[in-house]
Length: 131
Image (cartoon, rainbow, N blue to C red):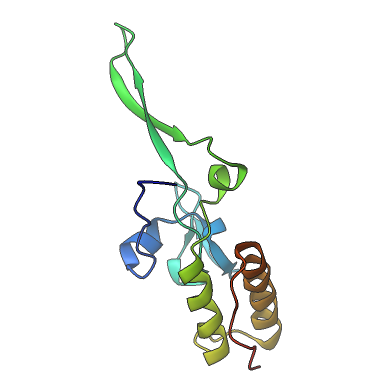
């Protein structure tokens, strides 16, 4: 989206604020917090979507003068998951190759296929799979 700075998906505060759908995998065993995000956050692996877009909506009715946010309607992807971050997709692929996430062989392959699909959508090249 023109004029919109992407969130820094290397900052823990940004990562912690993402919805579960922004991750390549969410391991079982956690609970959902009040916002519907898995807790503990360490169960969420490989952030690669930007936060869902939000826009300010002003309610100027005399009885209710306040601001609220609602999901942007820019695209279907933005409504639910936020836009894909090409740099983050590449970082997740490198981390999968390096075994950084301590996944089982099956989990690692599923995560790779997920990232590979996004790379095709973005038309970016991933490093060769090394596992």
